Length: 365
Image 1 (cartoon, one colour):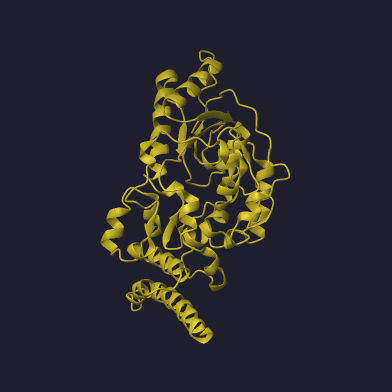
Image 2 (cartoon, helix red, strand yellow; image 1 turned 90 degrees about the horizontal axis):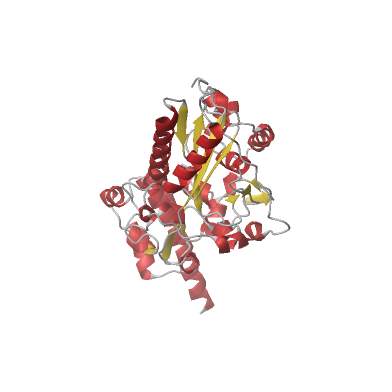
């Protein structure tokens, strides 16, 4: 990307206003601009990596300084257009699902259409609008993809502050939103960074089932249920399995506990409507899905990235955490000889949990 656009015939203040206006028309709830200065965030990232908190997220280390230096990732970048889009739609109440161990809990962001497709398509349309205004220009669109420090960039653009749970928070919208970026070589007018409003609150820290928020603003991914159920490719550590509860894809506990989310707004995007009843489906029913069922019912969803084997792994853990019953034990037993060693091991663990409960009941008379 070459910096071709420091031209006197472009009024960048007018263009900046046009970008914000068009972004809102495209369905973003906020559109703001920042430069690529992430010096202090780069130091924090390196310290986090040195502590080993990234676990198996090797890509966090592989990309080196490109993550914190936008112009190294996309040469010529001098501004980043940062956007956010609300995703919370209707469906079953999250707390109700979490407190019913017979149901599988899926993080609210993953219940509808894959957000990568939705947000990136809108960013492309925003880029098309800019090109219509000024002609060809250098840009690249991202949403939770490539080595991009989305939350620090959004904070610097004024979209919100990074909370103690390490998610971005907005005073008027809480945290139930997606982020996206348009790296550009246009010298648009930057916005003012947001300030922190967490104060002395520690609701998210106290709510984390596994204690993954090891200090304010510091997350050990190796303990995080989102990491364990989505990013981890091998066995879930045995000591953490009981703490996973009925969460089979991601975890929203820190967001559910955050007081700022009382200001969260419902999204107007029907693409994010829950699909196939996955906002509150029986674990036993989900465990009966064949590979073909899984592929068909997760098509076009972020759930697809998990893969069938880890889908079964996660459900087996959740079934191990449900109250013992003949139906649950029969469901687990049906996959005792699953072709996947990973699935078999988690099924065996779950069955052993139920057998232990049964023995204890018999012993108690």
